[in-house]
Image 1 (cartoon, rainbow, N blue to C red):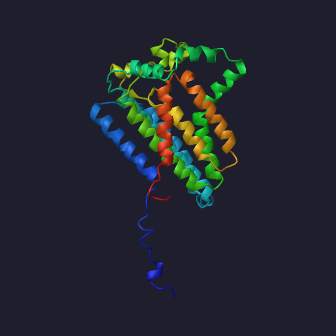
Image 2 (image 1 turned 30 degrees about the vertical axis):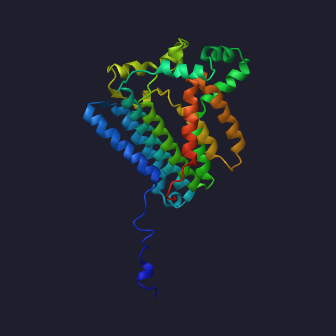
Image 3 (image 1 turned 135 degrees about the horizontal axis):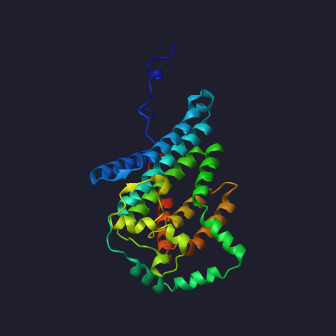
Length: 296
């Protein structure tokens, strides 16, 4: 007969320690909720309902024991829920901070680029002169950010790399929050607008920027949010973190090549200054070098 002590959980395993990525996400959502309530923002309820339905659909398979007890399926589905919640919270926070509306720093960022020897309009003309195939490759790489995140989540989860997946989610969350927070004192309309180089579709993707800054946009609609951060570049940080997440796997070299192309495409296709990209890379490298004290 086992002793009573043998049946009790050990101090190391009880109470269970929450995953750091979940703690980060819940803190983000709490901050958003308090800010939205205090400042009188509106939330598009239809989008919240769709988010709730998506979360429910991801958790539905876990009601069945065969899926709940499969570590790979359970880890992947829970990570997908975490990612959805985090992305929603991060998007809301970025809008709330843009509405703070301190003076723009485009002139300063452009001057820093010039000091580094970069002529952004010349770079745009050079990229426009590339062969059509090269332009398609750069465009595809630039647009691959979110699909890559989904691929990394599915690959790490279903290949049994749950610890690596949790590590990626924590680092991605930390980097994204740092980018959003650092962008607040460095608001910029971006190189497209500063140099008058944006076309119709590019301008259409930035329509919320002025509306947030002048106070005319007060609704947060998750399905219609735009990527409005210039400094630091989230695309640049994402490229580093995605390549890092695939290290030591069969996808490491394709992942590295694709993310180098993403970095090359980001200044022109993302309307970023070079210093935006360099800051995003530096921030991501700092997050990669970070060693969280808790193991998960």
